[in-house]
Amino acid sequence: MATNTPFIFLDHVTKKYHLTGQEYYQALNGITLTIHEGEFVTIMGPSGSGKSTTMHIIGALDTPSSGKYSFKGKDISLYTPDELAEIRNKEIGFVFQSFNLLPRTTVLKNVERPMVYAGVPQKERTSRALAALELVNIADKANNLSNQLSGGQIQRVAIARALVMNPSLILADEPTGNLDSQTSHEIMDFLKSINEKGRTIVLITHEADIARYAKRIIRLLDGKIISDTKN
Amino acid sequence: MDYKETIREAAQALRRNVLRTSLTMLGIIIGITAVILIYSIGQGAVRFITDELSSFGTDYFQINPGSSQVSTFAGSEALTFDDLDAIRNDSSLTNINYVAPIAMASETITANGEEDELLIYGITHEILDILKPEVIEGEFITEDQEISSERVAVLGADVAEKFFGEDTAIVGETIKINNRTFRVTGVVESSSVLAGGFINNSLYIPIDVVINQIIGEERLQEIDISVHDSNTINQTIADVEALLRDRHNLDEDDENDFQIQSAKDILSTVETITSLLTAMIVAISGISLIVGGVGVMNIMLVSVTERTREIGLLKSIGAKEKDILTQFLVESMVMTLAGGVIGIILGVAGAFFVSLAFKIPFVVSVPAIVIAAGVSILVGIVFGLYPARRAARLSPIDALRYE
Image (cartoon, rainbow over all chains, first blue to last red; front, side):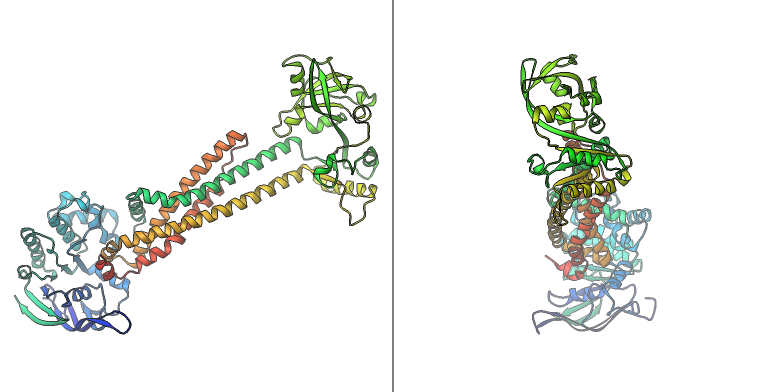
């Protein structure tokens, strides 16, 4: 927990989704939240609580309607779509619940993909992708098509891809939602070990036993933080 | 962005749905095939006619009676020997090499027990230099025979074969035209594809004999004029035209009652017709390309919708708008270029078979191929741009949430 500047700082962030005409849906209702580098934070809440919207904003996939979002000390709430893409590419690794990998594409090509957008040359892409796959013990499947993998294997490849750009933040959105409990715990152990090596992890889940892997649990309800506890 | 990787990936995406891709490419394939095929055939035809005409030379022109080609044989507006002599005797027409009149008749020929109706050319010896047939037996009509109005006939090779069979010496044989006996003095054969048909199927007789003993009236179907210098042929043509208009008492507003045509004119007529035809076909293929392009746009829109979540995923791992735009644009360009290449191959192959079947030169126009390939890519860009932009501008969360 290195510097004084917060790693992630949400300052009275709101998010409105426009429906029809004047009507809108208020997904976030003024969230203020600080996350420091190296933390392992779980955001919990029932559906409609705003946890996904919070994750989208933290993950630079979306911007707040009002309030500020500082990422590593920079206010990125007014960044353009391409500037946000750059942040996602270099700073954030995503692990989703489903549809993590490009279908009918090899595992290796999937893991190489973020480096394609970063302009990494082919040779380096391959060696870095293989190293990342090695890290999650799935290098032997490098040339398999993504649709030939089991759910647990897919999540491991997704973690490898999330790590391959060496990002400062891993965002995992219900990463164990489709897995049996044994595989779920394997995946969580991976994430935990990654965090122990110093990487910040923000995890979204509604399963209590998954949330327990984190050091800090933030609960949301109706677009507001209702509790923020150390684990 | 890695372009080799992008192109490879686009090709892979298109191969996943071979049927859909090929159906989409069909419009492009048809359009490009049509353009290449028609353009190649047109160029082949022009080349063919150019070769033919230049084998006869560009140093002569012909005058036919009548204000249009149809009336050449109608006879109301005639070319006469007086016209011929006037041209011959005009000392100001210094570029003229010689003037060769032709009187034609169609008569029943009897020989060796066979009978047939054939075209007879009443000619002077100079016509040999213009029609350029090969004298394969005996000799052509001589100046002496013209002067003495001898009843001699030179036969086209096909005529000779028809009456006397193949490979027989026939000089000295006789044929009958309207029961008058003519002595055969030679056989000619032309290898020209265009003119060989009638040259080999006709008889050649001194013009005075045809006028006086066969037709019975003084009417010329053609006057061929050879010039010394083909570069100034147009001036000579204008001079002859003025001379004839004057002789025929034509007012300034009157149209010519004769036609003058040079080999150059015929060539430019052919070129005009060919380029008109080509332009028409190109326009029609243009419609096919537009229809094909709309098909491409349609399928690309479907593809963008189908791959919305994929686009969301790519955006989440850092794809910028330009990256997504490039990916879909390259995909539609690869599709239309592939269609174009198939069309080019089909068009060239088709032109090859047409050239074999019709014995015209096989012309492959490299500029046409390059333009066709360029146009196919252009269709891919124009019709792929909107779907690609739509993909590029999807918001990452909308795309990720898409069900």
